[in-house]
Length: 445
Image (cartoon, rainbow, N blue to C red; front, top):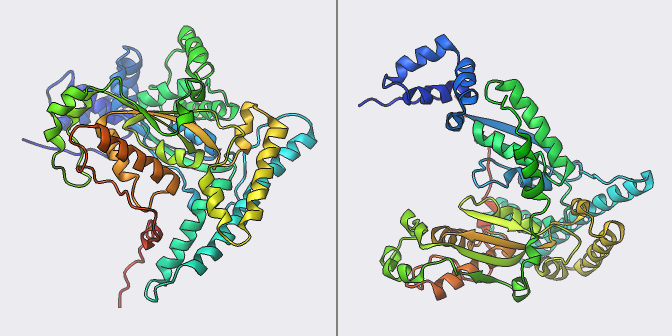
């Protein structure tokens, strides 16, 4: 037996190496020599594009870095079950220097009003941050030996509240690590996204990929397929909130597609189960669960990062602010005044933009949206346990606890075998340790 790791080749060359296995039993060492002789671009043009062997494109990956796009555009890029990447955390941004995407057209006065509204939200968020820092500093005692972690915890907890008052049009940075085939497929849909910003991003990404990998991204456009995507993928997708009245009941779950009888027979697979241990993949065959709930858009952004489930949400439009943010704010000195300012800004969004699609760029992250999440039992257990931890944002943590309670009550044998944290929110210094820090180089003396 021989094992090789080849990470030093370009994506198309890596794809070619793997493709050669399907045609030749020779060693990868010999295939590397062929790559160098033939050239990966010629091979990809002949087999991947020319012969339609799109699976070859699955074997080569690239990493795309997209900077200065709105939070809305970031969610569109990440709206794929196979998305891999990272997004800049709002906790570590200085919003006094961050730009906002303001796409509305009209008179100069109207455009200025739109930009002023976004700036008003950013200013309010900054004031909320200062207010909550003062509130938490006075409310909780600082351990004498953990002053650094205490200060970080205070800042993080304060931002949990302040982030809810940032406009969704504020800019962020996103990385996207993707194989060549999926990049093409996802961009094909993003080219027809309802938001012009997303369409522009898709065009720019495709242009750069064509420059970088001309053999892999010269696929002939299929007009009929593009027209179908345009008519079905984004524009006429049903609004989540219009499906039925389930959202009026709060948290709910549909289980018509779940096999409870088989789950009863297989319940020994999770009795007992160590903390955070995944259920066997075979349990995915038990069927699907569909959770429905209202969640603020800020926490929806966190939830959408899970790739083990399918998540849809209603449009972000002028609506109700999640009560948690207002309750936390009104508990601080002077916070009630800031809450009134937030209410006025919500009113201004409705006044100036109504239900226009681009109103989303001016809505705060605390705005409620209806969410539908379909997942397997394995995925549901994982999310309920992971997102119920004390360091998770309180609004998302509540949903995870509701999921855990439902699973424990309904799934045979699951009660007592879930490792979710069902305790009330507590003050914990762990919130201040969730950071990436630079390690000082060693000193030589």
